Image 1 (tube, rainbow, N blue to C red):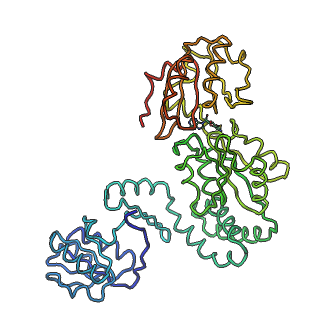
Image 2 (cartoon, rainbow, N blue to C red; image 1 turned 135 degrees about the vertical axis):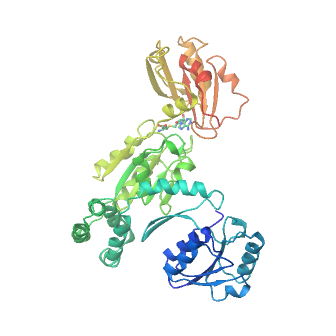
Image 3 (spheres, rainbow, N blue to C red; image 1 turned 90 degrees about the horizontal axis):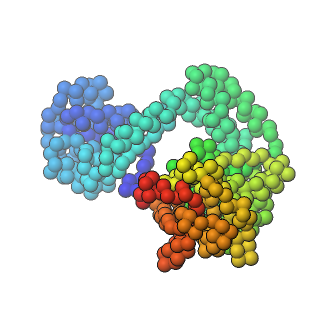
Length: 461
Ligand code: SAH
């Protein structure tokens, strides 16, 4: 971050705007909207500046800027079209440790003005660090449509209850839970519908009801984090990731996905690298139960889909037994993600009628699979956890009757910027990749559909 966003209290403070043109008027307008007292210094002024000064009761001085103009100022904006003068202002202001903004010149600025979505008291500021004000404005326009205009009223209502809620609930978690239920529930809806009085009554009722509850029950969200690209998360996954106060994640969850969890959530890595189960499965399950019983909202974040080779079922069995509320959010499984991003349609009609997801995990040194069942005409096979056993998988398939020239693809780190796709045949693949530095996770796809990769691959990393 080149600039740290801060919100500056300017009520009653005197701020200097140098320049008398349209840009100066716009900047002065921002200061006035934050209740600042604006003083303008300009050699000449446009009509709109004189009108502005009159309307807002600003003070002004007509003439060249001089250093003394900075006396008693709290903040300075230089909006002149004189480059040398802007530079001088910036230097002088910096020498006095005065926050200074020079229009259209981020290098001379100690602060920059963001694009603002004003739902006071809620204010959203967007900045491109001075690199592209147009982009910041476009983002603002999108946010404008997403943030209901009544958020201001909602925040005001909530603000008036803050102290009482603090007194009623002993812990931060309880307060957070209460506010989340209010801000995402019927109270907020009533505000959006313009029914402020009803909203206030309902909030009062909720406060009595929820604070009377003695036992805090937590909840567990078993969330599929998809194969890596954060864009592939579902809306629900994102919402619950933002809501949970504890997150248990394993190695398959990409960093970019993890970064979308709530900033202040406690992040617990429970490992699960191949052959290195950092935390044994039973302990993970017990941890989920314990945390939920302590009243936490726990997100169990898993790679891909939690029910596909994810042991998600085992994790919620104990929760169900212990009567702990939970919900399951599906994720895009590695097979779908890798196939899509590698341009391999798993059931293209010309080649395949079915697809099977198979574990290539080794048992006593070899994959323990019903090979005959796997070798069917017009069927695509997808092997999860198959890299170590790749040679054995290819060998067994051929040994049990599959054509040794059947196409096969190995997708490394599918859907991420490190995605690589290797293709070959059952016969050639084990040798083809011997010299390659293959990094897990990898997925293996076997079948004629792999032929389409050359023509349909679209994701370039
Ligand atoms: N629940 C997960 C699978 C867990 S098993 C899912 O639905 O995707 C772990 C295996 O998934 C890995 O060994 C690998 O075969 C596969 N895998 C997961 N993410 C992958 C990725 N981004 N690229 C390639 N393979 C992946």
